[in-house]
Amino acid sequence: MLFSSMQHPDDGNKVYSLVSALIAAKLNRLAGNNDSDSPCNRLLTVKLSQATQWMTDHGWANGACGQIGYCAASDPCWQSNGERLYQLLDTYNNGQLYYKGVLCAAPRE
Image 1 (cartoon, helix red, strand yellow):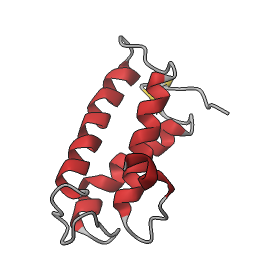
Image 2: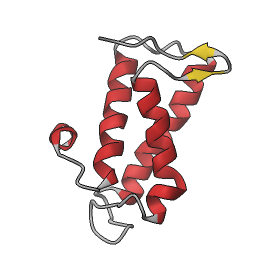
Image 3: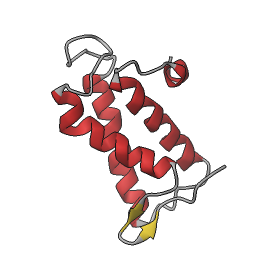
Image 4: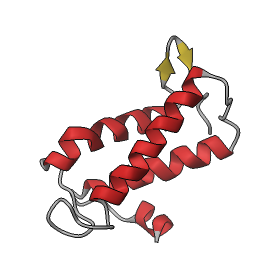
């Protein structure tokens, strides 16, 4: 289900945006971007946990945004935290996340 979600057009449903960024970030860490003592890694551990919790709270688990598996960009669930998590994970996935002056992961081809 998760991988099919990555191929689904978001059609305004931000659940698909965040799940794609979340899965990609977890795969990036498995690919070697996981220096456990770095400030970047500690930040990412927290943000991945928060994004996973967001998916539990607002994604397909209980439909806190009105419909199961739906959260629009204009919904409070996205504006309060989802968008910020998505932007951070997307920046990391694109090799552009700096934290405390350090590049967290080099871009991957």
